[in-house]
Image (cartoon, rainbow, N blue to C red; front, side, top):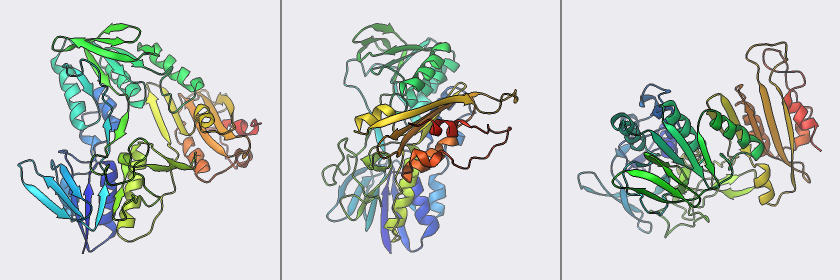
Length: 445
């Protein structure tokens, strides 16, 4: 019987484990996780902190019991201390100190990512927080409930997590400030024409924005009281760092080939440089169809797909990933933004002779007086090959499903000219006869 060991049981690990157990027989699956819970939807933390959902129960979609019922042996709160790749043995230790030696035929690394922690003075002060795990979010909520003197919260990092947390803390009645080294929020996903909209949205709702500033130190006696940047100092009662993540490669960084940021390099079957070892989720690279090369894009959706791909391959069914486009979305108060592929800035940085076509119009005909909002769209494309490289949309209307078409277009290498006369239906309840997708593509040079 094939012995398969999975290290890590969050999104990628859970997808791999369930796929194997639901699809294949005669396999022996052992799972190790250092945490006390499985499958926590971290992307819902801000909703929980901001009281937009009733508690955290709905943020879990699997459990140790569910996996064991399917036949896996699951070791929770059991960190793996060492892997002997030559002997194919995993060494772990349980919470009560019991040592485990688990041999494997195939190993799946789903070790995820770790929050980036700046090496600055004051990081050991109370109320300096990171938010990734369930326990991190619970700690923040508990402190807000108990420490009534927490009035001002500073978020370091204006990416998705930082912006979502800013809204959450504002909903809790706190004074909120965002500090970032970049010129805008969401700079990795949108061009300035879109980030300006989000920044105005944040400003309108009372979020103080401090861009082009680098945090140098934290000050306080026992609790954090002040945050020092290269330009200013600000009083604060809590600092939450959301400056990014790095792949957790501790268990394989001396044995497996690594990407420039330390992620395990994998092929389209999720196999590493060791034929017996697969890596999935945030600890591994992805094939990025927009740049047509490997890349690192840490998203839960990528993690789930990589887990499914690896599961079939370790169980003997050859399956290759279709690659990813980094499709993503965010909703802050009433502004919806979605994107996929490359921004114009990133396309130019990757050497493409890129251009954009922009368009803005209402979702529906103007005689539809209710539930009708303007939509802003940008499509990024290569002027030479005409290949679509990326797309961005923004509206108070829910335009989120549109991005899937552009994701598929990038995956399949479609040109922008292919979309010019695409058969897009029309009904006044939904859209316009001259819809913004058609109009944007027709305007491409």
